Length: 278
Ligand code: ZN
Image (cartoon, rainbow, N blue to C red; front, side, top):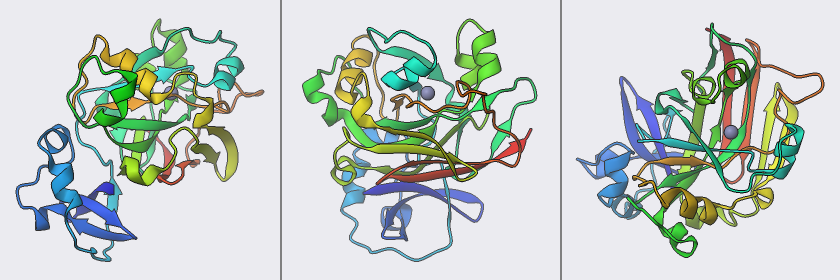
């Protein structure tokens, strides 16, 4: 199943994407909440999966497929080649940082360059959406707490990231978390240990990697994070980026107004975001 949120007139509505058609969840299940904490906590995934409609072919703009997660947890240096390109040592345990949920934006919405800080960069990442409130989840049970998977571009303001002693500001500017286009469920994603990730900027291949090369895999991350931190339904864990970011290239490349950034993980799909001046 592929969950979406789409814009219909003035409102954003939760939906399912089936073979290029849109099913309006609230038309079939009046009272269904938007796709966020209550949706996952109160069992709407199962109800929605049972909708047998084949959907309508409508012109709908997709927006961020999740609303107001309590937290976005990100991983630093979780691909060996990316750690190497930055001149960092391999981490001995997962390196966590956070991104403000207010940075989320739609899969096809613009990335707005901040006025206060430069060197804006891309990071394609596989993101996990948590489906159950949980704590102290063992690796063995980790897959049971996942609602689905999506693509996140962990857009980064490198100037702010490295000028500050920690990363929160440079990772959290408005529009610095394009996410989507779908949340796809476990049964449709195939082998999560072998997904190809890529970033293209203006069509040119910049990042290419595979989840095979994650230093800490998804069950390990969930066990580690949930040891002392409650995960809530709708929380996002973004699993880190492969090598090929702009900042560590020689010479470095930074995003400028007019660029088009495309982050792809099949079979989930692509984020396509234009960069605009703030
Ligand atoms: Zn990242």
